[in-house]
Length: 372
Image (cartoon, rainbow, N blue to C red; front, side, top):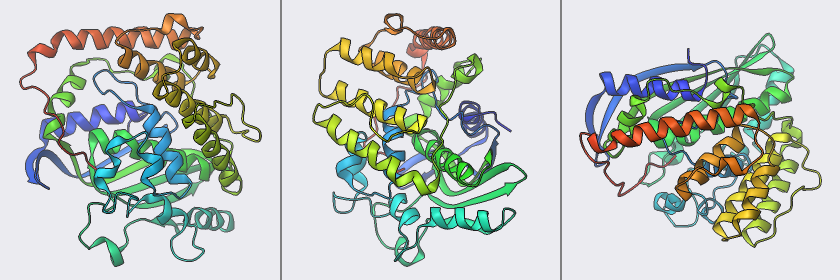
């Protein structure tokens, strides 16, 4: 059992690199482990800041909000994931976007509300299931067929456990890039809604794989002999307090503030946005848009300083420092835990960078990207 996403990813990469079999599928070579199973004990420790992984926390937040809101449009997602349009059949939507399938499967079918209703009606129910794969449409010819297919919520005592079934998972861009993050957020929302705490998050994968373009990345991640997460240093995560009944109102506030931020208007405190997690999501999306809009560096630093001490703030600093090519964390008033983790991270990243010239093969640029 892994503690959190950081531990889970490093374990997955060890497994795939050590015993994976190379196959050629969808025009790409990949190392694959079949029938992979893992369990994560603390799914709320979902933020990944790992040397050589180069994670994009802003894209994870944006896509998660987009899914929870039931959306499938490229207009919103493409600002945070420029490659999104490559996996659209019409350039406008993701045909198999998870959001509509979870929130609007057929007339009046909100699977999220249905699961919460089922668990409130019978806390020990084994029938709290959300389906994503649609046989009526997903056997057709499309760029976009869902990789994640089935979600099962199971309450036992005061813990709400979630099991996810995935037909095929790219360990770098799929599993650790978005899927774990978005489903752990969904798990926490359902847990809050039924008066439970998030329990285990279980992952069943038919094909867990690493694409050839990521072989060198996976090997570099493994060279870090003591990978740790922000949570090992005591950096806190941000609690979700929103129930399913309140979710759409909170998301509406996030999305309205995001739209203003695209146009250069940044609202520090959004009226009615009371959830600590979603309030921080809003501020994170504002920070990303401030950078995109070329706002002054001092304004970006002020926005970072205004974030609560958290895994989000650490991940934002790491991402922006990487883009700037320098650590600027000492310009910010951070908690000792945040600063200690960032010092550890940047030292480990520098040590890996020294070894990069000795990689057995250069990282291959991705001509296409795996849809997530």
